[in-house]
Image 1 (cartoon, one colour):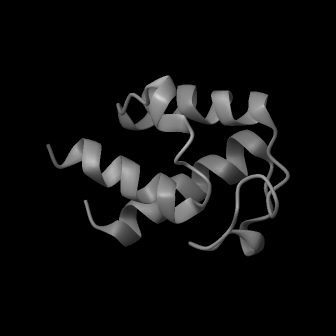
Image 2 (cartoon, rainbow, N blue to C red):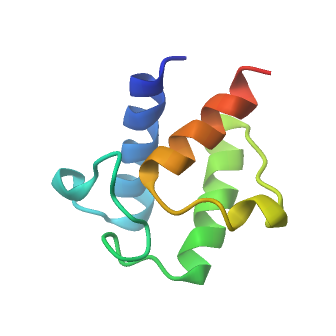
Length: 81
């Protein structure tokens, strides 16, 4: 799966599950500052990524996930192993 395909899947998840306006989602979007996520949304995103893409995010890895690019990089690292 390419980075663009991963981005599109994550974008679709954000639109469907979190009602984020698709036009506001870029690779540079900050989950908390730009997309108004809070800590519960972040946990919900982790659960959704596991359910939809089969990637598991450990608690200690969550601190490094800030932007959509971070999410994409994380997913890519998990699915290419």
